[in-house]
Image 1: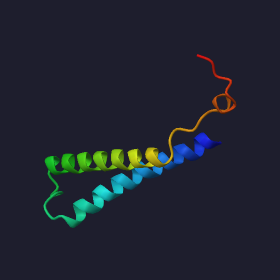
Image 2: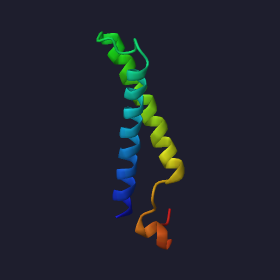
Image 3: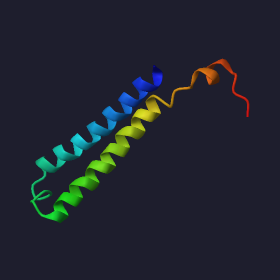
Image 4: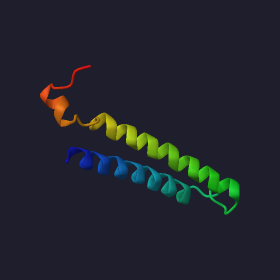
Length: 76
């Protein structure tokens, strides 16, 4: 169950990052002018913002332990 909640949090962070980049592009005239190059810039901005948001989420909510790790049953 914790993995599902964690995955939803990561997805929300990535979507939020992309939305932030789109909002920045809309408010900054000239970034998206309809040319192929401007769409590539928008895609790069979205990717960077998504990675930063996902990293911030991981800092707050690291990967969850599975049940065996929580009980100390994992041996390497």
